[in-house]
Length: 267
Image (cartoon, rainbow, N blue to C red; front, side, top):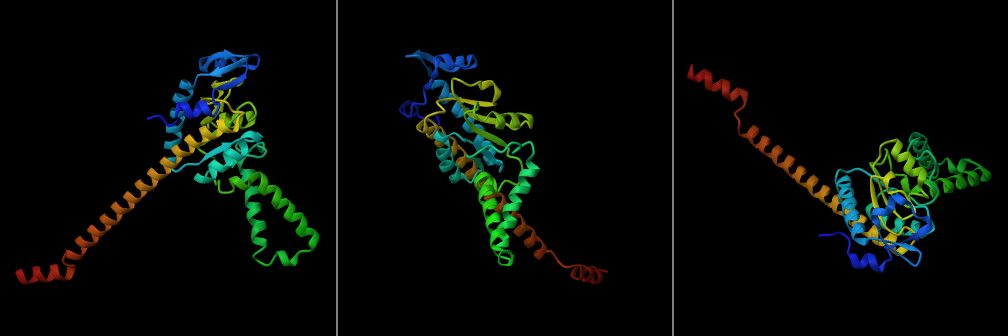
C-alpha cells in the first residue's frame, strides 16, 4: 500500500513546479506536462519515489541511527520543525553552519559549550560573575541555542540527511556527498535530482506541499522506531528467559561436595 495518497498530493499542490524557463533538464523524467508556462510534476512518479524514500528512512530509523532534516527557507522551516519534533530527530531550520558535517568536531565543542553554560546556573558559578559577564554569556547561549539547539543531542554524524530545496541547501548537500552520507530530498523542477540519493519530485515552495511529504516521511520513521522497540523488547525477553533457564539448571545440578560424597560411598 502506498504511503501517500495521490489525491492528497494533488490537493496540496505538490504537482506545481517552477516556470518552464527555470527548469533543470535533469528533471525531465518527472515532468508530466507544461501548463500556462509552468511545469507540472507527474504525481505518479512522486508517489513511487516517496514510497522508495520512506522505506529506506524506515530502515535507517529501525537500525537506531539518526536522520538530520534541513530546511531553512521560510515556507518550510516551521513545517519541518513541527513534524520532526514528534520523532526526536535533529534538524536545522535556521542558518546551515558551514562545516556542520565536515567539521563536526568543532560543532560538538560548541554544543558542549552550551552544556557548560547551563551548568554554571546550577553549580554556583553564575552568582560569582559580574552582571556584564552574565549578559555576554547569556547572549552567547541564545545564539548557540538558535543555531545548534535542535542538534544538541547529536553525538555523532547523522546516518542520513533529508533536505527541502537542494538548490538553497547546496552546502549541506555538498558536505553530505563529501562524507558519503545518504541524502533524501524534496526536489523541484529547477533542481538537479542526480546530486542526491533519493529524490522526491515535488513542489518545495508551498508549505502544504512540504507538509504532506513530511507527514509521510515522519510516519515511516515512526514505524521504524516502533519496530526497533518491539525487536528490542523481544531480545530482552529472550535474554531474561535464557538467564532463567541457566539459573534453573545450575540450581538443579548437584554441588561438587555432593558429587564427591557419592563417589566415596560407591568406592
